Length: 508
Image 1: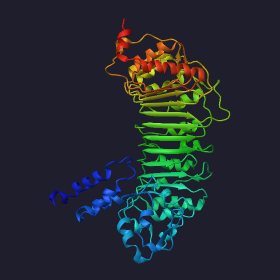
Image 2: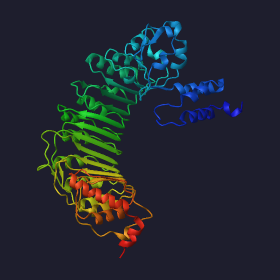
Image 3: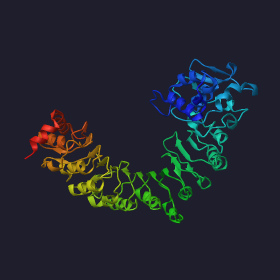
Image 4: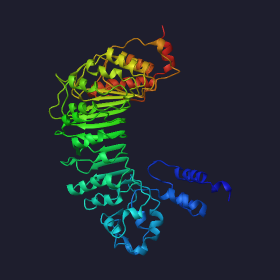
């Protein structure tokens, strides 16, 4: 054997290369057969190959089937059952592989054979999960069990080595069991960095009181929209030094006034924030606490329709470091597109200070009555823009003061722009900016959604679009059939045009 194969780093690279060969999903190891063959080649390869083969599991099925066949059986319905708890002498082969497992994660095992929920209590009746999985650092408990009876077993998986934890609140909830798991987190999993909590029911009255103050290493906290979080827990999260990503739900009774008692230097490291709220002022109160100079991504959705002044107040608190912002109103029965929910350029003026913006989504706030001056100013300010989506409510029929000049400005000043979602007035076709047109350095914009934009003569519009965005692949229309047909004529004529000859033809 070559001496280089005795070097762990080289051996590990060889094994990783084989493991990744033909991989379509980095989360799911597909090339298991070659790794298994490599492990059987010689002892030199065996340990490293087996470590890679068993490092991440998506079910307990393969491990359970390492137990003696007298302990399990597969029913005709392709459900794997444990018939009895394994004895102390029957764990040997199981432990050879379970000690190598570092992660239970999605996607779930694609095999048709499914482990029955009752298998977990039997499997851990005499041996604790910690003794069987001493190397475990990442656990998504929902792939092991979604049964409320098994939910308390999460506590038995907690250890100082656990850095990533995800679980789902069961359909039948026991508040005491949930509180017991939450209270155990800072006591047993003292180095948790990522926590994600979801729910199998669309809405729950359970208010989460999260003991985050005793979790100093927490970097990511994701809580599903259907779960409420208390103001006290929010203050605990705000005081953590290393939290970089937050996903939270602010329920109607959330006490935003309590956030005024927050200490200085709150959310000092926050970079990604996603909020689902009852109303926008709740989000304003929370975002105003952020002291981090590196808030990169902000996504907000809310139920109660906000007025222009409320939106401006919110946008005035977000700072200037943002690279991505999404502001969305969740349509309700009483959502209207008329005054006072008509939004003019002044509403969004604070966003012009966000010079690093790469993506902006403003969706269903009301009626966006924007104009060329604002879009052109935005294009000059957001030179790194890659995606823009400015959308009124579907039943808003105002003809915007946004012309094809705005589209030309976006393609001219935003060289990385790939997607545009914007209603405009395409009845008048402006002169092409020939002096600024560089066909060799073609605009990468490929997807254009013009919603219910009005259009006049189709051929001049197609020529204009071909000249300013020669790589368009998709044109979406959200108008009535007659309008859609006219825009499809534009796209058909656009596809027949050639960029080079067209530019020469349009030169004076």
